[in-house]
Image (cartoon, rainbow over all chains, first blue to last red; front, side, top):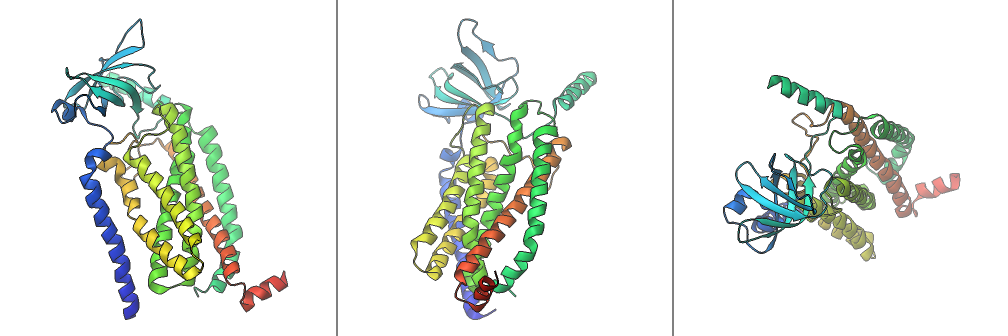
Length: 145
Length: 238
């Protein structure tokens, strides 16, 4: 390779790797802010601030949803199968909100360790299949049980 | 080889073929994906936005890689053709990123319950959109092509760091966006009846990118080479 081009190649590589390292360091330092939510394990361990607007994310524990018959209040438990955080929310839930499904709730953690949510978003997974396949799968699990 | 004139001639021969392939892939993929593919067991029909969302993100990210590689060639070898390709990638990529953001936002409302959330995936794709716009704006800020290309090449290279961040953002950080459905090394987590039209749409959008890039680079070359003999002969012949 021509020495001048070789020098330019080195400059190009320096630009790419230099910015790469800079961005990696910056995003590592800011990782707490880049994470969208706290998993229940961190909330239970006291790593999440109390009384500050935060987000909690995980799975809705099966059998934990309690709907108030007189209002829009919903109580449920968010878990990461490691720890559990009780959530209270009053409002309209997204269609995909269900037991055993992912959610991201934003709100404040009160001093009793209950998460007072002001917004609940549904987090869906990366699996896509037709309804018939899902019912066939459910039937197969039932026979196996 | 590699001269603008050679490229203009050879790309003219490819153009009709790529156009035919693009149109047929997009027509087949859209009809299959929107009308024939089955509904999703959880999301119902709203998941069909995937047939435009995922292909447009793929092309937006690959388009950036094409632009960054052309930028490296521009800086190292000072190749005219690479300069043109780099400049022409930006508006097409910006358009694709805009489609990806818009379709994703419209998909987010019925599934997540919100149009937008500042999670790592969504934010890094928004940065990609701004990088494309930045390259376009920076190019226009210079009077001469040489300085413009040099500045844009550096910006493109700096921004290329964002591409792996977009790809791994859903694994490195907690996000609302779900992890990837299509994987290179593992089996995809999508039923084959839904997957085939998606793959056709991805191929179709890649071809559309190639087609738009060819058309845009060809017109850009004519503008730049307007003083040369071959372009004058071309115009005289028309």
